[in-house]
Length: 214
Figure 1: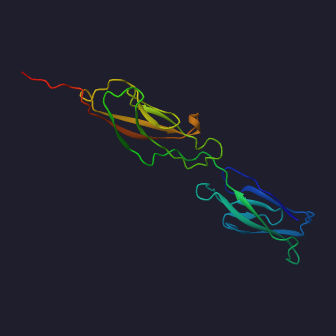
Figure 2: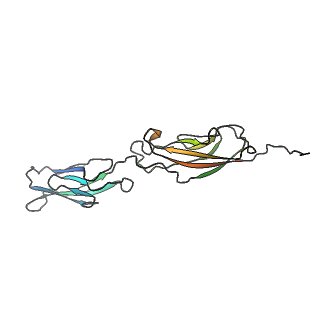
């Protein structure tokens, strides 16, 4: 029977070892050779016909292709006939944190009534991360506000922007420019980040009585 050990790796480097194929009829005397076919065989993956070691010939990007389906076979070196049935296996490209969060819908514009109470929701911003959300924290994003304090705040997990000061008066200042950051790795050191701008306009409410100038 043809056995294989699939090495789940982060990013394959040129000539980095990946799976090891081995037939139990291989006595190590060189009478068996291994061949490889399927997705990327010869162009991306090459096999050492003597040992069954498979290597990648170039860097692989999970965001371009996450899986490769390959087939391997053990042949008698003299007769070139199979000594085992052909076996199929899958190489999975595991993720590394190589993509920063991006605000695909930014920059944002929003409005909120003047004199709104603290905690009034203004707008929700959303960043997406192309890394694998099921592996580690590479795609787990937290939000923070870089510009716009102390007037506004942002919820770290949801990206919802809220008012942070009471009694903001449109007649004193009617527009604010916020800069929001999204950082992956749950905000830890080494995480990648992206930013977007949010222009918030205070909309008018009836808070001024008529006045006679004279």
